[in-house]
Length: 359
Image 1 (cartoon, rainbow, N blue to C red):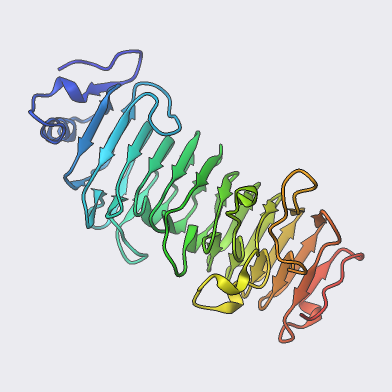
Image 2 (cartoon, rainbow, N blue to C red; image 1 turned 180 degrees about the vertical axis):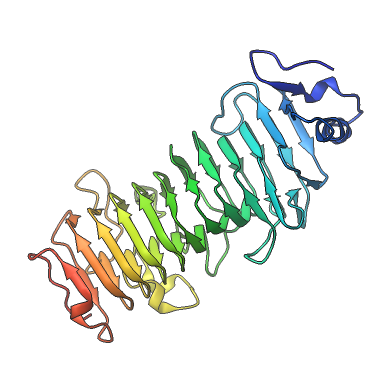
């Protein structure tokens, strides 16, 4: 068995015998699971393919030899487990996973982790960095506690919402991520869906949402910060975002700060979403309390890119919620903020030069 080269700490997958990559991985996992101090399994600089679901365990680590990349300039790890996922969490909680410096490619029926909702197992105190995911159905749908996503990420061509996350005390994409080019069908689709997260920071990341896809949806939790997210669109290529780019339906103590928005609300009546109330503005708020939208930037292209936003579309629409603050709003033209008639004017606090009429 060979140690990894170039200072990467671990054991090479290719040092284990096996006629296929899955056979080698079976032996590698058996070896690593028996070690008190578990070495990382190092996936070498070549293309490889895995077709079996693997149950993870405390301390399991996968790494590449070279820092992560966009797609597969240094290696490509093909994952194909149609109707399921590659990595499965056992019941209860799993701690200390590490996956880094790798590029993965899936298919329309494969998820990276097997899907779970908020009642499923929980991943604790784990770290994922410098990763690329291309052509997956989902990347992660599950519950996290104290999980960190760091380094450079690139997520492209997802067939459905790639990230649907529950949990607390997490730090997601603190160094950035590019997420782009969805292959999603009709209906309610998002790049990042946060049904219930708390005490969690998200961003900075760069989201390009097109057609019916919304960049981020937040439904609940408390103490969530969206930091420096750039909500963009390929409007110049004829692929704008049809509806909202950020949807907040609930949550307590939510901060949206220093975020960029371009190319939203191009065809809000065409999204096919389950609720028309979710596409009333580039930022749509339908619920929650203690929501601060601070220093957002709304661009109409500024003479550099074409503006795909429907004329008169609100930059922010408030259809519900309470204790909402809008501060230092910047827009290419005059900021447009509206509220539903059911939302009292007193529940919204703004800078003195910003009005919030009913509309």
